[in-house]
Image 1 (cartoon, one colour):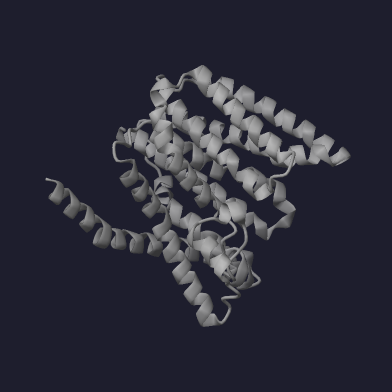
Image 2 (cartoon, helix red, strand yellow; image 1 turned 180 degrees about the vertical axis):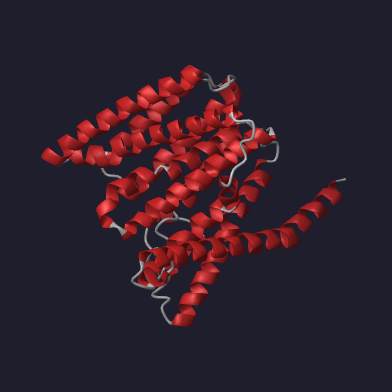
Length: 345
């Protein structure tokens, strides 16, 4: 990957992270819930980017080592967050009730499937981690089938997965589980798109996608009207199917927009790359200061002051988390890897 391509990916990650933060920040303003729903496009972008990047690579032959590495990158900052947040809450006497079941959900990263919470530790936004780990778990199987995939087979696969998801949505599966199946579908689609797409993104591709997005938005508005007037099945269809699929189309459109603009610029490095470096850590910690015990909106009566404090706290905690994770990785895991490679030689 060239430096320019790396900067473009960094920009996409940074913007996606900002979208996620804005989405949750708007929880301070219930009257802007619709805007919050639009900014919720950040998570689909992360699934797409992850799938696309790994679709360009060969992760074998040691799939076990690759998955362990990805697992460590995901869970190490998360466990440090749990330890710090839990310790602070314990010192304040506000840890809340944590039983064995909730503790196991936390440590096994099952919050995306099983839901629930662990005392007053903020975990409601961490469902993404459950499903990105599932994506990593199935990546070796995706790689094994990479050489046999074609555009027709990909279209059939995504169609079948989407039909399965919609059928589950309209029957018995809990909503918390269904919301996240879409992320896995996006990851698979982006993974094989990266393997099949051999062209550069051109304005004609962008115009076509923009047209598709306009149609999707029109359909979304139409079903929204039906849902508001009729309720029932239309409401379920709108909230659980139409919103998610149009958000996915919007995510793809945003990615195409950033890629096309980045390719047209000579220097595509940007401030967003800074957010990209700490994007995962910001994702983990930011919601802690938007709700619950450490809610920054309760600090004063001044919205601007509270917002600035929220940003400072979230970014500072994210940087600390990144630093600690890097140090632990360098001290314990990198040494072990070097020793193993030395023994192999």
